[in-house]
Length: 188
Image (cartoon, rainbow, N blue to C red):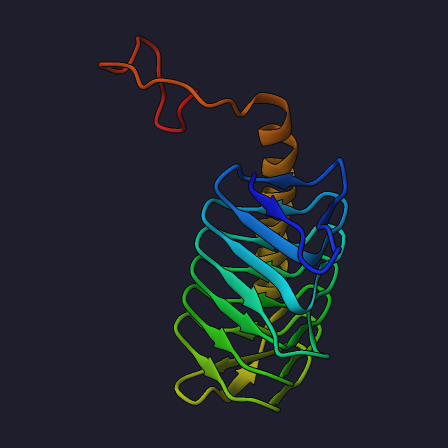
């Protein structure tokens, strides 16, 4: 993985975390235990700190950045979907930010809340715990059900397991010309 220091600040990655080799970490970035950072994600701690707490995942193509004297904080078990942008905001424990969603400066996504795919959360917005927000700008839609919260938690557990699998078995390789015998739909 490309890691860059800036102003003497070097990214920190817990040895149980998996950061894909194409993800880029710059400066004041802290990736905690059991985290997953996907391909082509950019975590830029060149102005403010970027923190991923235990078990958080940041999927393919996400951008995390902030203004000076601010930070991006993704608390434990936070789940950041493909292509999402977090800028100077807080994602509380167990919350989900959907695919291609944008969360702006000073916004706070409450515990176990969900931001729908492609939603835009304006600066300073406070999303209540266990609430679904959607739209441009994002508005509260309804409380989340226990089943939805449980399903999200299962998805986060899958990414924590993926971090362990990737640490143990992911290697750069040349592609095969065709699939081998016995290769199932899941690749096994």
